[in-house]
Length: 277
Ligand code: VGL
Ligand code: ZN
Picture 1 (spheres, rainbow, N blue to C red):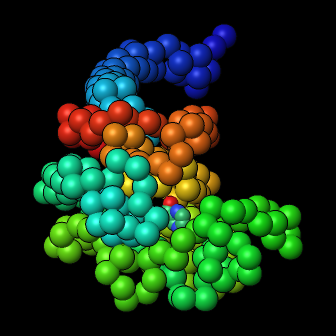
Picture 2 (cartoon, rainbow, N blue to C red):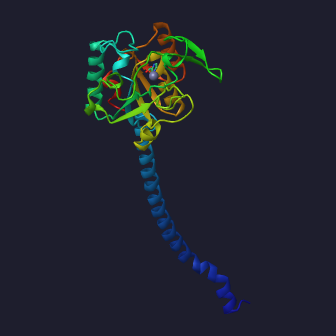
Picture 3 (tube, rainbow, N blue to C red):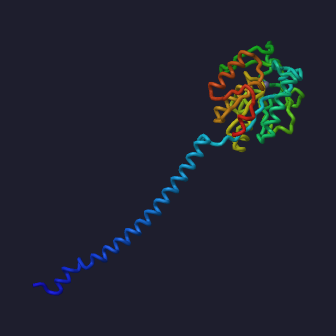
């Protein structure tokens, strides 16, 4: 015979069922609400992800270019326009006007313009006059095995021939090189002894990661500056119709080497190409 307590014990689970059910219903409703919230949260996250994914796809996944112009050694002594002592072929007045016109356009578009300047003391090792029995364009072997071309005296500090032939107002900063009599310095970044100029520091301080380079001479200072720029990690664009070389064949080979090593060679400057830099 069942005692009332036993009955209660026996029945209690049953009597609780309706309550449990309704609680379960409430709970499942709450869970559905929670799930709803979760769903809209996931949907939002998806939307944001897709949006950013698409905008990343639209602009390639690379750091935005911060661009500077580097005009290499556009100085009197390197030009026929000024009867320079080391005049590079085809550097007449129309070349200078073209360089000025394009540089002005770039400057007006907001880009800083760095101009390198060959700036030698009279006792510079690259001058033929400082080597007994040697004449201009002879070569000598240096003690470390490198070959050095001997040049006519050029770009002597404080002389007209050393002047940069660009409107001063266009130039953000002049970077001088070749002041150490012991080392030549074709590169705007450093001399042959490895001593750095101010260029890299100035560009880094201005957060520049991309260079547009042109000037003289294609086969010497432009080449060396471009190759060092690539080594330093810059994206480098060379505007070949604004470059002039000492030797035509060597200049062609120099442009090829710049390209091989990662520079982009533009035949001419197209402002359209740089508008989304
Ligand atoms: C350069 C020879 C000697 C140049 C400078 O600017 O390319 N060439 N010094
Ligand atoms: Zn020089």
